[in-house]
Length: 396
Image (cartoon, rainbow, N blue to C red; front, side, top):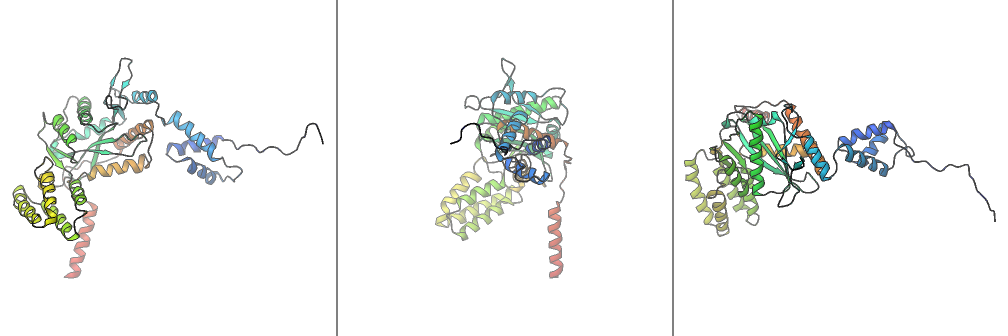
């Protein structure tokens, strides 16, 4: 047996270290929302690193986590979220395109009081810019006001309320985004009240007046729209026709195909009625024809109760002026843009979501978008017209 110290000329393998160029590349990728595994693979391709020169996935994960928490607000620390909201606070020196937060007051310590997410103190913060708000500083008959809720943007399940207007070519123009913890009646009232308050502040005392409001069949939402706008606005509460069709189609799942097709065709006929008189002439015979089928009696009761005699009966075309949207599709497409271009279909922490939505407001403010005050044919409609004309020419 040998005793004493044993030495070898072979060095222990050293860990690969993050070089300045790898850090710079990693920061850029983290800011764009890439995952650690994709960043690691990108480093290998970008700098031609071999297996022994490449960082381990754990090293990249630690770097991404540290940088995100310190610089990109990727955490749910309440004090840091308050500090972030405070830094975005609205003030007279804010430029037209810089995003700012609103919808909250300061507590006794001078910090933002945005609630804690409980039923007693729901969380609420709004984000917008001056330019976005001033989109609605025009004749109320020139636009439709949309309010919709989108989900799956953050890890705690808070919904985001999107408020905006659509013009006579059905293009959507964002006004504000609200992050909230609950979908309560009082929340909708607070959202609309704060939107009107900040609009008046930005526009020099001008009131936000609406003529057409498009939304889904939510009683809480409608009640608060009436409560906030009803005092000084004579507006029409329009129903999203897609929402109507989706609910009707859901009720028809157990109905035979023949009867289901009949109901859907009848609902479309009612939707495209040219006037109130035409609609009144059509709706009674249609409902009577449904009663002739035993399987359709309950469908008639549901449809009449929900879409004919309730407060959500304005889903026909004649309620909406020519060129305006008859569904919430403009705002739904904007919700899709948020998920595709900003959140990248990932659920983020609240701090990150606030920054992403603030960036969205800023980008929308500087993106050239003309507000159309008269209907115009879209490229899709013109293309369909050319196809139709060519088909007629071939048949002739």
